[in-house]
Image (cartoon, rainbow over the protein chains, first blue to last red):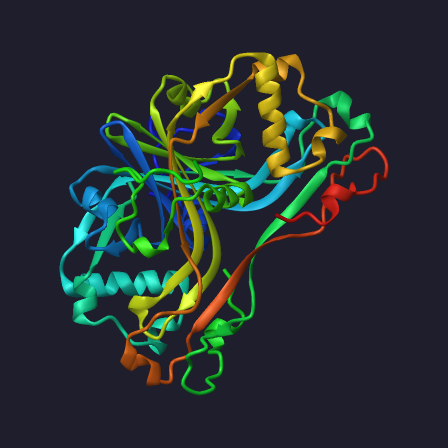
Length: 216
Length: 216
């Protein structure tokens, strides 16, 4: 299966021409995003929490402290919704009503399960580390047994998912194109600056090559 | 009141030293963020939707199409949770377990009400426009009666709120500071590139000054 089914949870009703359900589009956005926002519901009260994630195959990995309220709720088998958004530009239209943004967003639905087995947790931490900083795992102190124990890992098979994307310039009312208002796009980029060494480095250590020109 | 009360919904239990409850800190993050993620709960099923927002005084404004599922749910008086996150850096620690991010996030709780009166809706659209693009309102076609009608505006008094912030370098285990792993921070910036004119501009129109060096 290379696309997710359209269900009542993920079918895009507003501007359906912006929606995508294929895995390639959805996973590319997930893999580029540094963080996501996880939603849970406790008796009609929603909570939204920012956190890091990693996709592994058709599952999303989340992690946090064993004491985390969010993870305890997920652990109990409650459904979760995860959203992430990449901003690509401000769309400046002639009509205020048509102002918009270029973006790529993903919304996922599923139920998480807790990984209990130490090796499974270790492997998940590797995936999370690689998601954020490929190459770092081989050049750092790896997680200890105690650290593994203090970490809860959630694996959520991605059951239902949608991407929503907007690209391109403004779409204005026909009669406004003749007017003298400037219109266009201000592109947005997530920029990574030169790595700043920790003041506590015990000697001068060169920035590793995998961090030097970090980008996503 | 210059700070929000700590309640069961917003009290930060994990790493409470990163939490802030004062309005100044919370509003500054809200005002800088271009988008937020809105969470709602429908019978134990959470939904998280990215959207733009604007803060006006002690309230958050959201808008969307009158047909939007999200807005209809909010309109019915259900509680919502809104989160927004600004990423400031990747924190590269000597121990994988201590890797982190520098960020500023806000989580808000409240119940929204729909603005019905045309002038109130108009004023809210002005606030949303100014939030994203200060100055544009005076240099564009303003919303028509028909456009106002097609727009739902939600005003959510901010009842409960928290900010969470991390700044600075990695915090490693004492014995790891003597090791030869590089450690530090890769700063992240949201960068706005030069405005790109719409290919459909009917003649050459200079980029307005309020858009030329757009930043937040």
